[in-house]
Amino acid sequence: MTGRHHHKVVASIEAALADLRDGMTIMVGGFGLTGNPEALIHGVVARGVKDLTLVSNNAGSMGKGLALWLRAGIIRKVICSYLGTNEDLHTRMASGEVLVEVTPQGTLVERMRAAGAGIPAFYTPTGVGTVVEQGKEVRELDGRTYLLERALHGDVALIRAAKADPFGNLRFYRTSRNFSPIMATAARTTIAEVDALVPLGGLDPDDVHLPGVHVHRVVEVREHENPFEFKTTRKRP
Amino acid sequence: MTFSKEQMARRAAAEIPAGSIVNLGIGLPTLVADYLPEGHAWLHSENGLLGMGPFPYEGDEDPQIINAGKQTVTVLPGGSTFDSAASFAMIRGGHVDVALLGAMQVSARGDLANWAVPGGKVMGIGGAMDLASGCRRCLVLMTHSTKDGEPKLVAECTYPLTARGVVSRVITDLAVIDCTPDGFVVVELAPGVTRDQVAAATGSPIR
Image 1 (cartoon, one colour):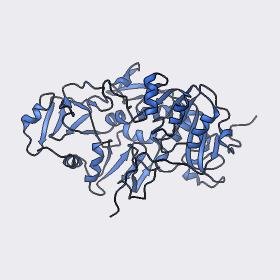
Image 2 (image 1 turned 90 degrees about the horizontal axis):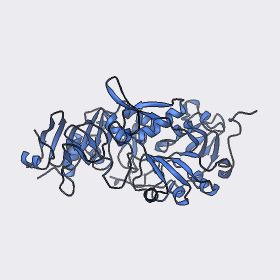
Image 3 (image 1 turned 180 degrees about the vertical axis):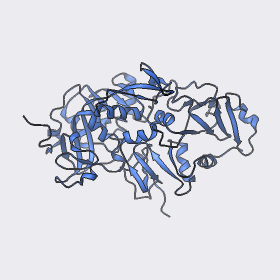
Image 4 (image 1 turned 120 degrees about the horizontal axis):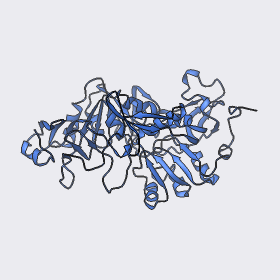
């Protein structure tokens, strides 16, 4: 018998995604197109699984990122916080091809944090008195009204990090971190696509953002597109 | 005369106490950053950034350093980046002092509607509900009326709500108005704007 924390580094995207199955709930890190595990996203389409439930803040943008999954027709349901100008999702939601559950962003991430921390549900003030309240337990505590929100578990989390060691300790870069470390705790299997793999000891223990206990497979991908959504600048003085 | 966009942003900036943590919503509120003196406040962006700086110089933009509107930004010295759960814990936990948000409707009692238009495309909620209900003080920066001339300050919101009873002050092109248990109270008029003009453009009595 072996534990799940042996031989995590895999040589290819195909190998990393080998045990994906139809109907799985897959959490994918990224805020818009920042912090997307680009090679894994492409790899899932190539893998040929379908009927997926996707948990993602935006589920793609400008035809890029997770919009590829929408275009490939492999998603049955999306749990997200913001659609914005994601036309691929708008059209499929309107046609009924994809079911969309919209959740406040803080509630979305806290539901995953709870799942990863062994907490089945929590009370939050967010959404009280709005459509988000529908069908949920409402309770007054210490004079304020709260909603009961349930933990959100995933089968697989696909995330992107800047650096990993072979145990799967991760370091993220700037605002590409967003949902990734939380999704990693909420999913049964976490697959990390990393810009650079360093040896054990190559990350100072105090600099680890996500301990390797939450990561099960690591695949190094050195080149990323890192697309801009809105390139906003100011003139040099 | 009314407040121009720049004057509205400048007026909103005056609401921000020195040394506070501030979240600026997408759209008009984003402009307010330009009118905050250097080092006056720390800007929080809910995608996981505290100490947000101005847009980068041309050529310095980094697609992995963005604000909640997915625009490229910079990180100031002393800034920090963190995950979304930590970011929303700051908001929900009352550690963000001011949320300055855009809105479609605000009711006299401070109900906020800023995420969906009835019958319109569902853009999503994003961080709007967390910000509105979690931040210590919720200010709104918006035009007084819609493009069709309908009041956005109303007795009761008819658009889907973001949060109830959260807005304390609204800054529009016509006036600065407080939401109170007794209804809208005019705090300040834009230069050349009369109280009657504001009353006519407001969907609930003003005091």
